[in-house]
Image (cartoon, rainbow, N blue to C red; front, top):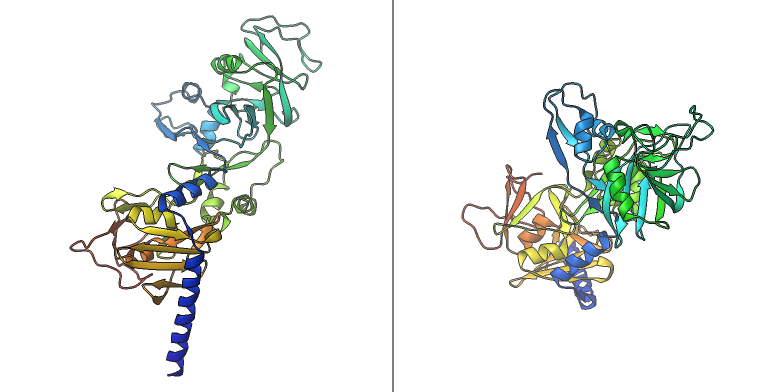
Length: 434
């Protein structure tokens, strides 16, 4: 009897805490909560471009494929993590990138990535592959600007060059037909008569471009355009369409970086996402610098509610036998009412007279006034609550199932024949997995 009384006392205390919390809750409609989380995540670098593959035909030249798709041959080699001598490979093309953060228009170059980003209206507008300086002739980092521009320049050999005389415009000129000199004398962006070097660490410090790309950039910039050159061996970015956070790992040509799981986690922690990261996915991405973005926070698991796919600001995160999803997004998908507490400390979701109240990191929830144990507690990301998907849907009277072929959680907000509802919050559904 003593244990029963203690349990009842705890239930009443928990319920009173929940009621007090509800009086403090800030009204935040599901759509607004979803939009606010998306806005918070948008402070991460963004993804540009789309992933692509190419079926190589026999011994078709990698250099020709690379130039056709606007990437470097060495980048294709990295992306496919091995020798490309077979001739019939299905190639992963490095056509999707994580753009560096930029607070102004102009050019940003990440040396390990060997990509040049041109920003317009505060957003990445163009991406061009480049060749940069090899070891011993490292391209410098820092803040510069375009100081001079020339069409059909004459190359005046520096002291280290073997050539004794200037090289006039023409096919033998290593600067090609476009030159954009930096405010650091002796360094610049230019076309090249050696396009096969694009994507490599091959120059004496300048940044080479495919001639057609140099022509395009020449029309976009002017004297005074800012140029920021950075050195980042890994990049983290967010795709708002998928709600997934990605990691790209790049080579370390100058031995200045240190791409470790700990450093990646520290970067994610600066965005409030470290505790949701897939550590195994991070470790695998760091095994080899492929330069291809891979998911590290959020899964590709689909959520289908009443036959329609639900989209979340942060994609479902597998946790135990459930998935954590943003409370506002789930409420919106279920047609439920949602209220979010200050700092995401509490979340209340209500639908058709049924309600569930969560508190951050608690292993218990209030479901229609009853205290229920949770296998997957509510947690917060960037101050927004993430609630257990199956547990919440079940608590609000929905039926939950799993489609193995589509890798999708199926939710029906009205009883559906042949679907068994989980008996309790956090309970396992036999067909459900991830």
